[in-house]
Amino acid sequence: MLSTNAANVSESQFQQMIEKGIREAEGNRKFRIVLKKGLPSDFAVPVATPLSDYLKVFFIEFNN
Image: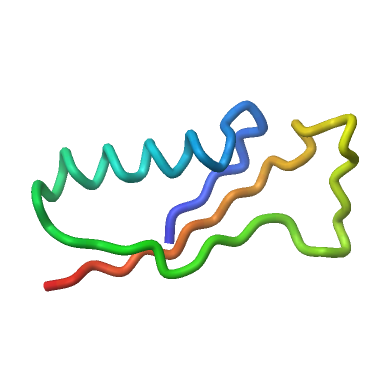
């Protein structure tokens, strides 16, 4: 599980960081993103304030 609460990092940017970090640390080891989560549905993010959508959580699975 990898997560960030950095409001200035988009989900796409965070995913790129994860993929780059895994490539650098694990080489060609295969992995997949099993699940992506964010803020719960009862924590609405106003369209006018995208920085309020700060929580990104990725669940990663490695293949042996």
